[in-house]
Amino acid sequence: MKNFDYFKPNSLKEASELLLKFNNALIINGGTDMVIRLRNELVEPEALVDIKNIPDLWDISEDENSVTIGSSVTMNEMAHHPLVIDSFKLLCDAVHYAGSGQVRNLATMTGNICNASPLADTATPLLVYEATVLAYSANGEREISICDFFKGVRRTALEKGEVVTGIKIPKYTEEKGLFKKVSRRKEVDLSTVCASVVDLDGNIRIAFGSVAPIPLRARKTEDFLKNKELTDEVIKEAGRIARTEVSPIDDVRASKEYRLDMVELSVVRGLEEIRGY
Image 1 (spheres, one colour):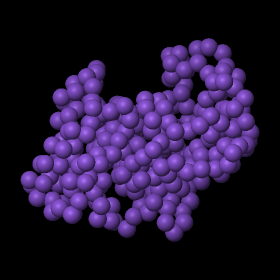
Image 2 (image 1 turned 90 degrees about the vertical axis):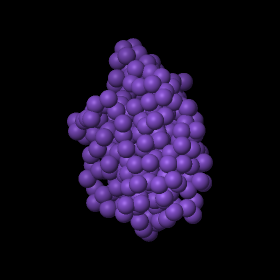
Image 3 (image 1 turned 135 degrees about the vertical axis):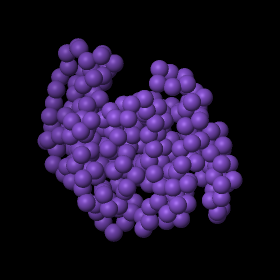
Image 4 (image 1 turned 180 degrees about the horizontal axis):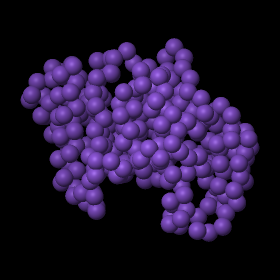
């Protein structure tokens, strides 16, 4: 591990200024991914900016239409919070698959998506919920749709100097569906394929992880399902269409063909779950 400067600012303004000061400064929050990447020299920052000391990033709040989860809220805190439990079943299910209990005591959902890994466990629920990423910089605050947030492996829409302050998730009246994670081990493993298949207030939405360079929505499959009764044939055809929307690779966890099969199966199982409510 190479030497770097470490800062723990007390305000968003200070954090943003530090990110702008260095050519290669990175944010650390829970650190469960960053520490491993530092140790393995996959990243070599000039500076780390620790945002855990900044007020207001630890809150979970709501208004009439949405719930906002602060960027320093840990996954375990989030998954056991009444607002999240009552409003976002798929997200709670996904969080429980994200590493071990010890990891979830440190890791944050914001860190999970800002790492921009194709297999981030919380990405597919956020995609189907059509969440919004809240970002702060010296130029002001802005909102980024999660559907536009992922730009490539380990690349996001964040600009230099921006700090994510939280993730805002719209409220829905009714949620039916499932989060499915396929992995080599039942517990504490990376996703071979992960999927969220859900009916939100009458609209079926589907998202996949670990089958493309970024987590993605299955738009063609969603369009096919609009205004259709979920018959056996419709469900089977939706699974077949979903296979055409992803571009998995062969790697140590699974073959391309296996991932395609799991994409199809995840859609079928999810739609059957929705039909069975």
